[in-house]
Structure formats: structure tokens, C-alpha cells
Length: 432
Ligand SMILES: Cc1ncc(COP(=O)(O)O)c(C=O)c1O
Image 1 (tube, rainbow, N blue to C red):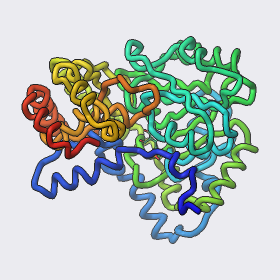
Image 2: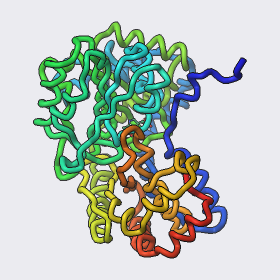
Image 3: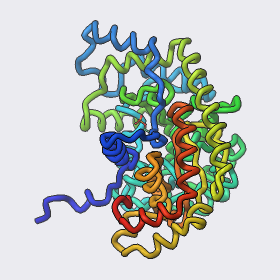
């Protein structure tokens, strides 16, 4: 009898959490690490939200509460999601979760039988792909197109749809690319879904970066398109909009109250309920007019950093980088670096078992981290299936401008250091 179930080996992970201990080891050794790996805003929790959480703690609002989420927060969510997307939302369709992440896997458990096909963006948030084989479903990556600013056309999606397609993830603004689909692209996608998919399809529209947009853009949801709200789960939360990743508050609007009840029951099974004091803080975050100002301040800083980093990257030989329209990531194509530094050849020459744990962009990511102390994420961390020859890095701009300047200087030196890279490969120490 095996100790661990077969299923357990099928779940993957989010590598962003893996890099933390490497950074800690470098810092302990006395190095200054530039952290372009972080998926969280580098701003404090806004004061008006913090004050509400403190007041709730002082009221001893610290006990079990409604497993679907406190009604005040659900009403605030229903109102703002409905108004911002031009749709009617009842607070009974809203379920609160411990962050934006849990409903991703729960949707696969709830909607998919073994053999059902799940379409998800690649590169994309790793948890979409991570869960699919774990629930016995079939992963179908939808490769985002760099030439479209990391979006897709209706035709790109149409090619992947079969009678077994059950769940489709969309994520705009996108992690890791910062890409934002245009209204026209979403209309094409919706048209394909309405024409080609079974009526029982569900679209998971991950809009967690809904408020982090540049150049005056606004978030357009696929749920706003006539005929789509009935098929769409709109998922978002407090982590990114209010710089509150540790609060663990997210929410989703389900197409029907019956579906919301199924997810409430999963909440009961997994964790009973979410801390009520944080839920009240999230309600204030949504309702307070002060939040508009704190979001605008954050976006202003991100936009300035984005312009600097994209400019610096595009000045490096072998690197090309699109200008992201939202979120706080840039996603440079480093295929030229892989070729110029012969990283592809170094990778091809590795023993088979080592090859499986790394990739050319991982080798460069690790070289940059261990030799130049700049932490980034590799392409492989954002969906592996069908991404073998794609060479990209994700750099988070949720770190101060001075650090970003230092990071860009170090990266420019790293791509010019063939001898250092050759030594790094010879040592075979830090390949994943
Ligand atoms: C696209 C996307 N969805 C969901 C999440 C999860 O957010 P949370 O920290 O609220 O669980 C993230 C976090 O990075 C994300 O990038």
C-alpha cells in the first residue's frame, strides 16, 4: 500500500513561493537582492481599511461567521461588480473566499468530470494548469500571442473547442504578461463560446487585476456581453487592488444562486468561513471613496516604473518587451539572449534528469539570481504544456524605482557575461 495517493503527484505548484528561500539564503550571505519576483503590490494597506480592521477587532468581531461571506461585504461586491460591468448581480450569487486563488481549483472540482477539457491561458497564472490533472480533467493551453500584446482572437480559441470543453479560464489584465484583451477581442471570444460550446460551459473570468490599468484604460469584462453573464464566474478580490495579499479575501459572482450554494458548501468543508474582521475591512475598501485615491496613487507609481523597465529592457541586446496595459508585470522575450549566450546549447547538453527540472529561461533566471542577485520568474512557472521553446522572463514592477534601476543595470551586465554563465553551467548547482 502506498502512503501517498496517486492523485497527489498530479498537482503542481506556484514557483513564486519557491524563490523566497533562495532570496533569503542570498540575503543571509550579505547580498542585496533586487526582488522582481513578487506578485504583490509593495504599498502598505491603506489607512482607512486598516482602521476598520482594527475597529472590528476591538469589537471582538472574531468568531465564526456566515460561510458564504458576511452579507455587508457580499452586498458591496454585488453593487460594485454590477455597476462596473453593467449587469444585475444579487448578493446571493456572491461567495467570499480566502483570497482570489481558492475558487480556481474549486471550480474544476465542481464543474468538471474526469476527461472534461479545460482551456486556460498560457502563459497564465500557474494554478489553472496545476489543478487540471489532479481533478482528472484534460489541460488545453490557449497560447497568448505576443503579436497581439499577449491576447488572443476568437479563431485562436475556436480551434481548441471540442464537445468536451467544460471550463475556460480568461485572465485580463493578465498575470504574467500584463496583456489586456480589447472589447472587440472579448466580443469575438464570446461569439465563439455562444456558437460552439455546450450550454453548460462555464467561463472563469479572473479579474483580480481589474483596477490596475494604465494609459487611462478601463476593465472590460466578458460578463458584460449579452448572453455571457449566464455562463461566467467573475472572480476577483482585495489582494491586488488594495495591496492586501495577507488579508486573504477574494470573491466570486456565480451565474446562479444554486451554484453559489455549492461553493458555500465547499467553504464549509474546507475552512468554515473567512475572518469576519477582514471581511468588514474589505467592505470598507469597496465602499469608501478614499480607495479611488489609493488605487490611483499605486497605478501612477506602477506606470512610471513600467515605462522605465520596458525602456531599459528594450535597450538590451537580445531582449524585446511589450508595453503591458495592466497588472504590475513585464514579460520580456529573451529568445535573443538564449541564442547569443548559447543557453539553448547548454540546456541541450544537460543530463536528461536535470533537463526535466529546468529550461533555457530557467537557466538564465537562476544565473541572474545567483550571480547577479536579481530575482525574476521564468516562462516555465506560468504553464508548461506546449511551452518548451518559449523563452521569456516575468519581472514584477512591484518594487521601488531605485531597486528597478539597479536590477536593470545588473541584468544588462549579466547578458554580457558569457564567461560567468559558462562557469555557472559547469558548477551545476542552481538549475531550478
Ligand atoms: C491571475 C491571478 N489570479 C488569482 C491570484 C490569487 O490571488 P490571491 O492572493 O488573492 O489568492 C493571483 C495572485 O497572484 C493572480 O495573479
